[in-house]
View 1 (cartoon, one colour):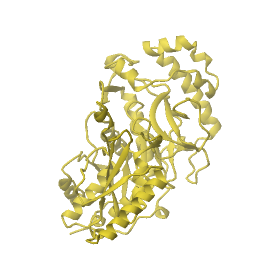
View 2 (cartoon, one colour):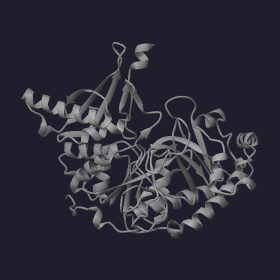
View 3 (cartoon, helix red, strand yellow):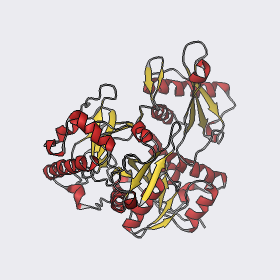
View 4 (cartoon, one colour):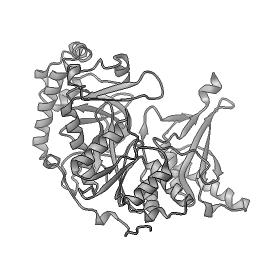
Length: 448
């Protein structure tokens, strides 16, 4: 029998704090950051890569007197990890490594990150913070639909849930029909995975004649890919739950860098463990608060592999306004894209999330879409294929044409580009158990 529940809405969410450090006064937090930054620089000098970089700038631990001195430190980029493959940035003996995660990426060598036992404990605590902020309680059962393996998402959330004391169903990715059965039979209250996979799960429910709103899920914690506020509304409508955003990346620690509280107006950065800068990706100068820039992260408490001023390529903004939840940490916006997944169409910078935002503004569309870019005659052309809800399909050509025009207008308004719009049948675009792949850029193939 299907389980029913009342709709969870933001005003009903509890304000719960896991660690008193989340409410530390700003002056104390700043002093702690400076102290930990000095320790991190000293620790990083055990790594030949950082030792050489510091010598070039003349920086020493004793030279760190204010947080502004952070800007004297060198940047670290993903290619640095590849050039020192596999574990050339290790700052501890191999005997102290407790676990290794990594990311294969789409090009080049994989990148590996190592953890000491203390690193793993820190990671679990950081994940526990945002999980509790997003409604997790010890009596809950959590269904984890992230893949378990080198990817940090599954294990990071797993041990964060354990730290809180809730039960875990480590379902991993794939076999969606079976996952639905597990959620129903084991009465899972919380879903962990990517936002795009949650909508696929809702689709499979409907194909099986199951109302996804009748699943026992109450909360969801999503990460692994950028998603819009409109997509949150869609997910909450489809699954009748409260969805929370969190952020992290394997090079820095994994999930746990930041996460939403019950207010859900930005993700609180765990500033006692990370310093986050927001820089213009071209000039590498700080952008004004509230403006979008590239996030650059310094990890303050990592033992195995210290990471200093890591260029994430993720685009977001920062907000230091006080939060009603009582946390004193600065907040970051959701990720609006990456500098390396941004595409340029006739001089206009476009992120896939902008296309998604435009689509979800139009009644009748779904968050399932694909962007294809071609250059047939020296000019870029963009085609956006979007699935339409079954009830919105019509045999009347005029009605479908009007829908396409509405979508094209929204895309131009939000993203600033003209796009060809193709309406496709429900369930015809590929679904992904992990991160969604939205863009097919054929321009390099054409030029090659």
